[in-house]
Image (cartoon, rainbow, N blue to C red):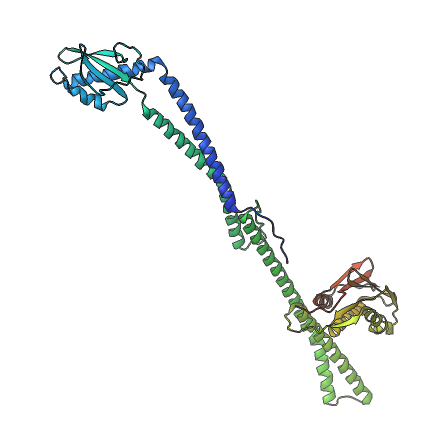
Length: 443
């Protein structure tokens, strides 16, 4: 069976697209959050209260350091250690107008002082040492860069979380489908082959699900055929064991009588011989049915011997000689044959078996008083043969196993043809088709 391949998206490409979409969403989210954080921080820094609080906090820390370390004029160099520890400030200490020391000897001339009180442009404040001496501190607080680092870290963290969340959300759909297939495979593995597989999407996972579904359907079909063959086999064995026993018993009985010469005269002996002959032919007929059974259900190594036969000759043979037995019993034929100019390739021996089986069924179920119709024509490179007859009143066209008709279908299929039968109202119909054209070889 040919399976039409669908054009599928590659799962790898889908995963790359999911990753790119999640990455773009994460970067955009991080950028938006950083912008919001920067605007909020800058707005906060631009507020005068913020600068004043920063300066007051710095002065408070300076006074705490002086009190804790008892900084006086004698050990005033301790203030240098405080200035080095403090970050984001510029400070210069003065007594009167002379600079005692500075944490940065070169003032930043490009900075604008909030309260310019000296020549450097920076504001200065009074600082009281532990011994009560008041000195001047030129102090400027800078923006804390750590705030911007925290904003960047917060933005990257939020963007990374959004990236991971979106990627997981999109991949989770595939994972959930895989888990679904795993659950359905366990159901199939438990023996419930009727359970349908979920077919969703258009990628390699979908192709895998379709492959499992096709495999399951194939197994079911094989199991159905096996069950059908076993059923037919059982019916055939049962029927054959019963049918063979009766004529065989009779045949043995008549042969025993003839062997012991237990007959009164020559006429009775001929009668016994006649019965033996009838029983022998009956057994032959049953053995033919057994052969037909193995032809349908068994494996064979026989190679057909095809030869070319004109369609006109085949139909002439059917109408004039093949149905001779039917005409001998008083039946009539109505042959309606179209123009036949082609030829077919057939094995005469097996084609004869098809005709024999067909005649056997017609004799058994056909109404001899009604004409047997044979219609033939050539259409679309095929020879069509339609045989129709009225069903004998009180007869059922169905055999116990329909083995004879199955044999005909099997042989016709081996000829790359078609054989079908059906009942239409009160008539029994058989349709056969054989391909026209040059000789072909069975592969």
